[in-house]
Length: 204
Image 1 (spheres, helix red, strand yellow):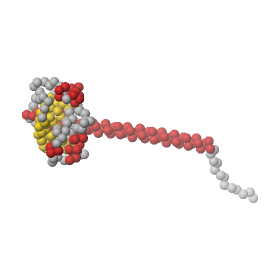
Image 2 (tube, helix red, strand yellow; image 1 turned 90 degrees about the horizontal axis):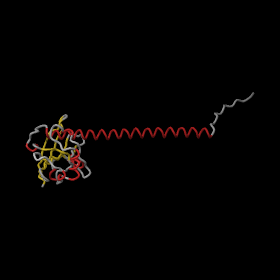
Image 3 (cartoon, helix red, strand yellow; image 1 turned 180 degrees about the vertical axis):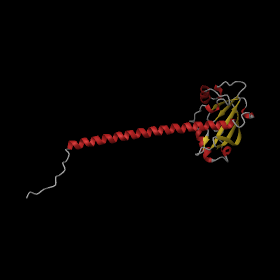
Image 4 (spheres, one colour; image 1 turned 45 degrees about the vertical axis):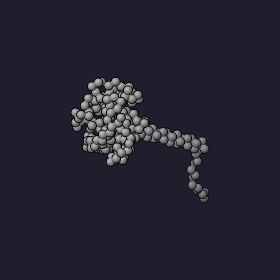
């Protein structure tokens, strides 16, 4: 009787193995490339969203300074512009304010900080043009010729806590090259910001 042996599986030739390996490697590289593109796009979208949200929230904080009483004496006859400022860096001025908000405020107004467009205040108060705002940021107050009937009101960048429901902003009013400054501490109520405390600081 003839013995039957199990048939051995045919082994692919070495050339076939190399071809399969190259194909798998190529597909893996393509998948990795696609994944990196997706992650990169998602990251960029998240950064853009975060920056947009920050700018929008900053605008609401600025509105909180004007809307409750737009005719308050210190804000009469002003023309507003954005200028990073820590409102005098002396630590006693920040005592009692939440430390996390103070830290974010100082970082938001460091030497690398840039002004922003005050879109939220359009229609609320006169605003310095964006071109003049950039000149003021680069060359100082001497670069701007304000209308005689207006005082310059500069708004710093806003520092928020992690939950973005507490904020600090510096407001400076200048008639020439000096003037008073005020540190405002605000809290968010639904979709509006209320002034909790205003600390007047005089800067010569």
